[in-house]
Image (tube, rainbow, N blue to C red; front, side, top):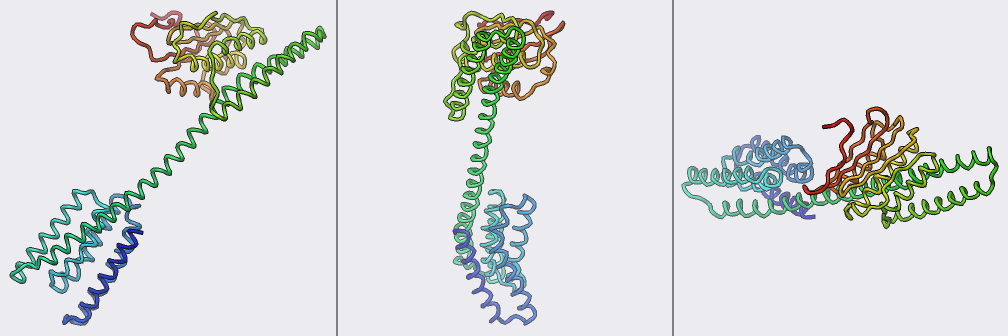
Length: 365
């Protein structure tokens, strides 16, 4: 609205200037040329505030240069320094499109040029016209600059909204992967165990026990999904270790897990719970390991296995999500195959210098 008002004012003012030129004493051909250039200037005053801000730097400079030449044309062609007052619109657009120091230098040069020209041509300076050039330029430049700034703020707000939506999508996707990946992997292992029980020993009681555990796990997974969607879900390192023990036992893998988590710093227990969950899930999915070991420290957790580690040497969605979670708490994630067979996942939190160091890899200095 402000830009529209300013451009309407420019159009009305320049139309009045065109009337003065048409009723002047200049030759008809020169008058026609001047009026044509003035008409182009009017069109530029209407279009430049809308299309100039979206142009690149060179494009903005070109817009201001063309506007300045068109605005100065009547004064030069008709040898009238008073007409330089019309440059107020070109200068105000320059204040909007150019860096402030460049626009101010251009405005100062225009004002000084008009004063010197008036002094040389007439012997005196029409200070009222100079004041109009300065005052109107400052007012219109402020209006255009504010409109330009408001447009940038609106674009920034829309970008922030998009980033917030994308961040929430990534959070839900990461949490859903962590929740369902572990639960479905464990349930798959238990279903296979139940099938083998029914096929081999036909021990209905044992099979019913496995099915009951599956039912409980399904309910827990459903509850976790609902909590994840609403962002109320919290994760416990103790519960993840207990779940890892059950999942590894169902998969026929020996579990060497810590009995307590008291040594782990409170601010790292939740993210370390995610590390245990994802690492154990990868052992169940991708490894033919016979032993899975979890070790804890105040600011580190290590999960290793003695399997072939096929398929986990490169970071998938789970390990990538873990790295993002750890980065959020200024931590790091390392994962690599162990010489001699197996896979190692080591997560470190931000550690004070006095904390115990995590275990070194075998064979390292």
